[in-house]
Length: 120
Image 1 (cartoon, rainbow, N blue to C red):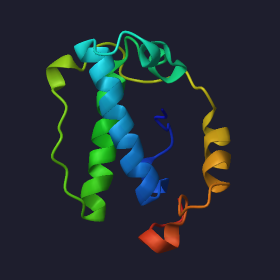
Image 2: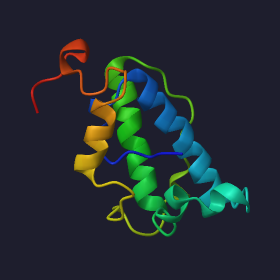
Image 3: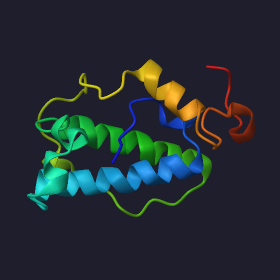
């Protein structure tokens, strides 16, 4: 389970879609109180407790990237549950480490040329 903290434009298709799927699972745990067992105690879950607003905003950033890439999005989150803090300051890996992890994976994360990104 992983919700990245880097800008979604840096994620390859595989990681963008995987994070979106994981984020929905995490949302269900936090908002609908599903799965009181294993994943409810996962470090990724615990760092989002009380930060549903921040998780909602991350979802919206993923959706924005979906649209930019021409993907369809059909699974909105209910904004009325977007409560708590609006930013995430707790990291399992700091952003610099997350970038390093992604750059070491055999995928197209951070491949700006392929997706038409500017150098930023």
